[in-house]
Image 1 (tube, helix red, strand yellow):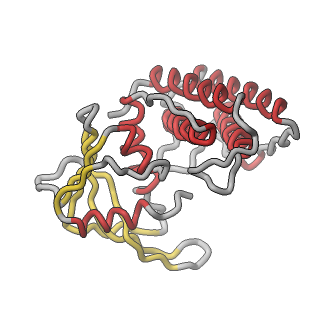
Image 2: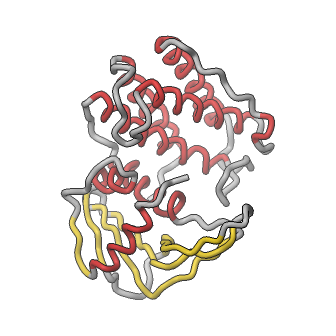
Length: 262
């Protein structure tokens, strides 16, 4: 389901460009439905900061971000747009000059430039959706990128497991079928438990993306790449998504995807 590096880089450029295009004519005070505490100005600065941070990480690889200098937020919307242009260009150029296999700091278990390339193309895609929703407009998502985003949000954003905890699998599987690309993502249900470095104990519903098992799914969720991606990122209500099978399994899955993404 993953794309080639050049595809990710191309999408990073096009999604960032669309994000900028939409926000350049958007009311700076327009609310962002997917991030209710933000307006369009906050959204613009958020992606500017994100792209600036990862450009710095790639430029200083493999060192971590301990010495990263926080950028100063411009006061005018025009200057914010200018800052985004500069930092978005820096990210794209830094990634284009790097080998995806090179080591680099990341917050995930995958410490490579390739992880950053994929994550940032999908970050730009999701925030492009935010920009369009704030502006009250929409445009088609690239189906292959959105389908990859379905797998990524489940595997990386919801399914990751820190080294201080453990995933305790249950004998239950759910399959997500991406109807417009023919892709499928298998998820095993379970519980996450562990005590974090601050001493807080966790015991909660969890999921892991798995290879196709030698079993039938207990439930199937099917929809287009656009519908599934927006629902998993809580940017859509999923009204046209189809559910089949054991709805208790679907409810367990919902408990996981309704948790905040840190």
